[in-house]
Structures are given as C-alpha cells and as structure tokens.
Image (cartoon, rainbow, N blue to C red; front, side, top):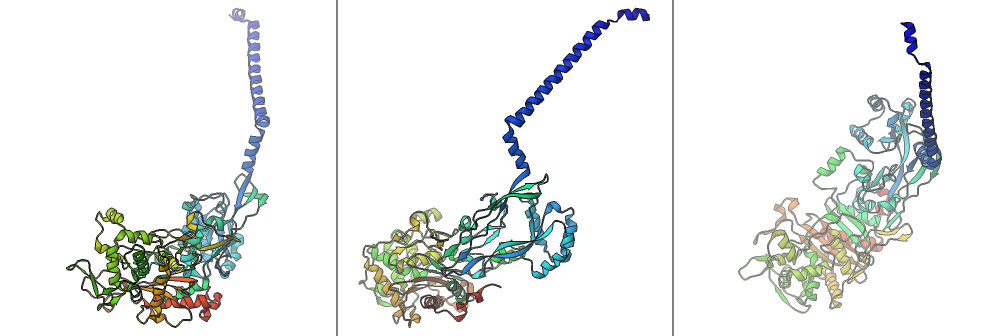
Length: 626
C-alpha cells in the first residue's frame, strides 16, 4: 500500500504549484508596496502643503487677546466710563480632578456665593478654547487676595489674575444716559465675531455702550502659540498686540447731569437738556437709576430681583421710553399750528369762560381756572395757559392738521441718533384710531389733544427736542449724545444727522411765540412768574398732566388722592430767550404743581450759563462712587 501510494504523488507538479503560489504572493506584495510608495509620494510630495498646514493646525493655535475698551468722556473731559484693574479668582477646568473637593476647599478660604458657582457652571458650558481660565469670583478684596495667596501653591488649576474691568464712577445718575456693559452670553455671541470676543469678558448692553460697541471694543490681539495634544499652551511663537477701542467724547455735561438728578429729590421723573445750536444732549436723566457696576461682571439673582420688582421701576429709562401726556407744554406748538393753517391769529379775541362745549347741550370741558379768563388773545392764551382757547382751536382744526404739524417737531417718531430703544410715543390720527379701535375720530378726541391730553403721548427726549427746535426758531436737530470719536467729529448717516429746517408761512411767528413764552415768566399772570428776577430772559411753558380722567363736574382734590394719582408736573424752557444756549424739559411724576420742574429748570439755567453750581459740584471727585 505504501509503495502504491507513492506512485500516485507527482513531485514535479507539486513543485510547479508551489512556485506559482510564491510568484503570485510576491506579485501581490509588490503591488501593495507600489501602492504604498505611490500613496506616500502623493501625501508627502503632491499634498505636502495641505498636510503640513493641517499638522501645524494641530500643533499651533491662535489665541485672542481682548483689547482695552475705549473710555467715555463728557464735554469737559470728565471720565464717565473707565477701565480699572482688578484681581479675580479664576479656574482652569482641565487641571481640576475633583470639583466638589475644590469647592469645599475654596469655600473654606473665602466666601463664594452659590450664585457665583452657578455662574461658573454656566460659563463652563459655553464655548471656549482648552485651558482657558474661567472667572469664579471677581474683584477680590486685599484680604481675600491674601487668604487665597497663602494656599495657592496647593490649589492646582486655581489662580489669581489681574484683569481690566469697566467702572462707572458716577453710578446711578448716569446709567440711563450712557448705559452699561455686562458679561457676554451665548446670545451675545450670536451677533458678534466669536473669535474676536473669545478672550473678552464683557460687551455693551445698553445706551452708548451698546450703540458704539464696535468702536469702543477695538481690535483683538492675536497670539500664535504651540500646544500639546491636549490643547495646553506650551510656548508663544508670534503675537500681534490688541488695538485699544476708540474713546468717545459726549455732549453730556457731568455736573449738569448730576445736578439735575439730585434736584429731582425723592420724586421719580426725568430731565432732558439740549444745546439748541447742535442738538447735543447736555443731560439725560431718568430717576430712579441703579448702579451699573452691578452688571459689569454679572449681577446676582438677589440684586436683579430687587431692581426688577421695585415699584419705582429703576430699570425703566423714563427719558427714552416714558410715555407722558405733554399737557399744556404743547400749547405753544398748537398756537403755531393754528397760525400756520389759518385757524388762529394774534389779533383775534376770544372770551374764555370756565368751560368749553362742542355743542350747546354737550359735555363741558373745564378750564383749570373755574371762573374763566375773560377776554384774551392768542398771546395771553399762552401766558395764562388758557385751556378753553385750545379746546376750541383744536376742534376747529381737526386732528389731521394737528398731526401733520406736530410731526414736523419729531412727535410720533424715533428721534435719537446714537442710542437705541427710544419709544416713538403716540401722535394720534384718523387712520391710527380706525386701525386701533375701529372707530372714527370724534371732535372730543381733538379737544383733548388740543391741551396735550387724550390719546397723545410723548417721551421726555421728544418734548425736549421739540422745545429745542422752538428755541432755535425752527432749526430742528435730531438729539445726539456723541460729539466726537477719538479726534474725529461724530458723523451720522443720512438726512437725520443734518439740520432739519421747519419753515413757517410767516417766519415772524417764531419770535412772537417765543415772546409769549418769555411773558409766561415776566407777566404778572404768567403761570411761571415765580422764575422772575434773573439777569437773562427765560422762555418757558408749564404743564400739568392728568393721571386719570375726571368726570364732567368733578373737581381735582390732591389731598383726597393717593400720591400715585396726583398730576404729573411738567415744564419746558430755554435760555437766554434771544439766543438760547440750553433748552430743558423736566417732569416730576405725580408732582402736582408745575412749580417744581420750573424751579429745577431755573437752577439748571443758572448753573450752566453762569457756572453757578453748588460748591460740591465743583469737585466732581466728591460725587464719584467709592
């Protein structure tokens, strides 16, 4: 059997088979080697630049360096928004192995609120580069800094960093004028360049800070750094220094702003002062305010809840968004409208009873003076603030001429050039009422608008701008905050940045109206005669805005009403009357008597025109926050 089996084996055939298999395997290996060499040639020669760049991207990282924020100055060079160095406790999360243990250790060294830990957790979830520190507690006191420094050697990943932070030296009196910055949120990052703001701590939120964010922020610095596989910075290869933001110089007068805020006393209200020759805002006050420094690094839940729940609404910017009936301050403008459309004249006489009726048997619209004023003319209607004259004038005119004329003074429009968020108020019309209430316009509606009541609503900045146009005899400037950016005068796009000329059919009516307003102060029956005795002429007009409607024969008795139901007290004025340098609108909410805003305005005129401030305002450092 063995010999027979050997006869069946073909050694030659097996040898040929083995050789063929070796040749096939060698060919296969050769093909693989050729493919590998070709691939290596392709990657290392043909695609060299591409993969060299990718390799560098893995090894080299661009790190941003936030620039110092531009400063904000008033017209006299007083710093209103500054940058201050502070020391903050920061944490590098990648170097922390046990967060609960770290929290326990740090809480035993210094007081860290739960809200600060919550903020830290929120920032930890936001986009950032590896090994970028996150602020845990900002603005350490010297004592806190010393306590942390003692144990810093054993707190891996914890450090104290010196940082520049925004600081507002005058606090609440200026917050509604210049706004504030706050911590950058994920929502903020949606509207800016993420790369540019990667190293930034805060961003402009409101007011001038928000409007000029791009200008104030500057240009981010870039550093090219070498990192390891985990993203930790090992060395710096190249750097480009950040470019500081540009400084802003405002028309605002710091002393006037603070003085106006203080003169409001315990009342809520607003004061807006404008330079009639430029439209520059000299003071923009909304009271009460709040400390903007609370928002710079992120306000606590407790502090924010306190501001939001306050009945005085300190977060609400009354100067820009407060809607008030202009009341009798609208009468000089109504007089001009009547003259412009031929419904009034300076010589026509009118017998002013204590009431006005549209129809003989209709409702009686009462004058503030129940016994009436007797025979008067247009000039005396302004001097004595005769309601019944403007009832009948508005009824004769109808709403369309009133709407068209008052719109030329900025009522019913957004007026500010470089601050966002102002309200347009309400300048009613036939079309508006039809769309709002599906009702026609009635004569009674016009009667109410004639004395600045009813549907009409205006903001303090609108009324101040209109007053400024009246003071300059028809030269209307949209109000503006910024005088220059760096060394370059501020420019505004489009026609709004230019002077708007209000041309009357008879230009002499400007001077006649101003003269009547001047007699509001100098005449023995003028409603602001208490302001007599200045070395310069003041032109003004008082106003009393009703908070609620009275019945036809109901009398207003402030002693029987809660303070929140007292009338608003208003005043518009400018000085000197012939060549005005300042115009003012002031309102005391629920202030009752218009003597309050009138007295305030006179003090502002004295201070601004003659540098006659109380002694404490001559040293602005004494007014700053600690």
